[in-house]
Amino acid sequence: MSTPTMPLADPRAEDVRAYIGAVRAWLADLPAEEVEDLTLGMEADLAERAAENGGRLGELLGDPEAYAAELRAAAGLPPRAVPEAGPASHGFWARSVDDARRETTLRLEQWPWLRDLRPVWWLARGWVLGWAVAAVLGTGHVLVLPLLGAALSFWWGRRLASRAPSGAALGALRAANVLAVVLLLPAAVSVLDANGVGAEDVSYQPPAGLSLDGAPVSNLYVYDAQGQRVEGARILTPDGRGVFVDPTTTSGSPEELPYRPDGTPDVRNDVFPLVIGDRDPWADPGYGWVPPLSLTPLAVTPSSSPSASATGTASPTPTPTPPGG
Image (cartoon, rainbow, N blue to C red):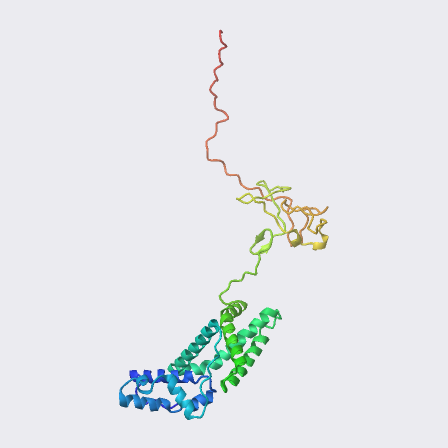
């Protein structure tokens, strides 16, 4: 298309572009190449006429529909096909589609750079639809099918851009575009989650039982203040829950543990040290450390509260006098 003959800031230039966009919309049923041929040089010609007359093109040339019909007749093309009368809902949707196409054409005339982004949309549409197929079928090909869909969509878009699509192809194109728009956000979120972008790792589950520095504790050996071993100790948390360990993490093989009929270890896991079968609970656990027979007693700090002296003299307690004594 030739360069406009008036500055872009001139309101008449906006009027020219809007008029040409409306004319193109009434020619949208023709192949894209024919539309380009019919409107080639139109912008410069109409800009010159608008500058000479100083009025709006709609007043000078008539409605864009009539002007488009004149272009068709001059080129020996048939008039624009009028859809057959149908139900009211069909007419409403047909008018809505026509309005949307005219609006799209107008926007493309106002922002021509949007035409250069059509290949990007073709790729995105195919990628989203390929992702949807992989998600529905559960094939696991989360990369192959989207790439294949992007390639097919790009080929399809190039093919349809060179000629006006038929009724069936146009319906399939609209359905594919609508479906891709609806699924674009879920597909993007799925990809971001798969790559760990903006999502926390919720797959980690802490080990059952007691842990220390992230590692499970397999047993506890309890000593009192005098350093003597405590048998059958039970440890409670501030909320009254008993501390327990996972007996399968002991140094011995899990096959050495006794099991109940339901398959769970037959070990009381909240009484320490653990009693596993007839094994000595204080025996070498196999971690390079052996529980000693005793520990150094802890220093007992005397109580700061006053206590009664053992040598003090107690006050005599009066003996009650029997009645009548």
